[in-house]
Length: 145
Image (cartoon, rainbow, N blue to C red):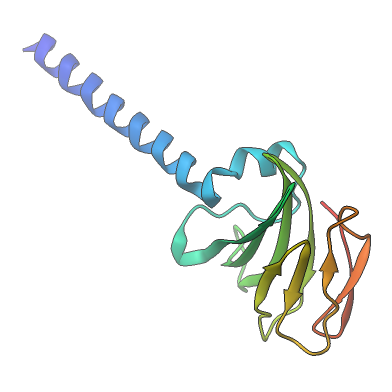
């Protein structure tokens, strides 16, 4: 009987490890590790119900994501949330521009330029790398990790 219990326990542990590995691979489009390694200062949420991590487009060397999130910190009484425009070069996380919702801004990529649907936003031209600052929904924002 003991060998059977040991075999079943091992099988259960193997299945949970596989599902954990699959979850990490799917988490934030597989970029959770790059975010951690790159010093990302925002929340890394791997549950779709609490956030969306959407590929907006590529501009040659850069990949742009629209990250929208909502979470309640441990022991917190108030939800936190927001929108960030994340920039990667290859697999490496470079940094982000914070948006100040509500309302969220719609993000698109045309050539080397990241555009926003808000009239009071300034497009981000990535032809010479991410600029240090821009304007999103009327707010001056700085590129940071």
